[in-house]
Length: 288
Image (cartoon, rainbow, N blue to C red; front, side):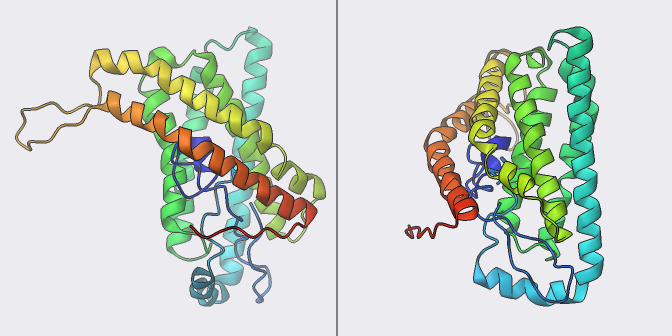
């Protein structure tokens, strides 16, 4: 779900929607607003945009940006540098583990603390939207971040027998490369010094990483289904005093099914954004 999330406002299977749009460029370094830069997260595929281009949000955030300009921009630079460094540490740990062990088995266990910390730390992105220092939809950002946290905490962490699945490595690699690219893109953009390679990577890597990440997430959820069905974990059965029921097994099935209509739509939207940013094409999208 993390991959889909980063793409657009629809969610993570429904989460992919967040990256489909143009990413916001957080606060400007000067008192004059620079507007928004185009983005994913594979995030991206980027997941930090969703709705940032709406004129009403832009106008509503302008006053806050002027008041918080320097302080907010300094914080966002620090935040993005920290997140870039965190995902770089994760990447190095993954490479080192594989070189030493020669297998992916045990990889997740060795890096899980770092992964959980930095992925959960991303909850601050919702706060950034709430206080207005980034003109992005709180709902869209919330969907993106929560879908990643769902994948980390409620699937991979909670269902330990699946942690050695090869599919886990697929989405870990895709997420890691995506996030390093995404956060470094935001950092350089805030500093008004965006190297072309970072921009190029931002709008090219997703072509491979997005499908790989989605495949890894789907296969991981699929591998979890037998364990969830057998254990009944996170499910609520009737009768109970609240007279409600919830079946986590069917919830996961619905989550997987949600990828089917959303993936093609969001992926092609991201390709259109890529043409717009890298090749300067003017793209007019139909209103639904």
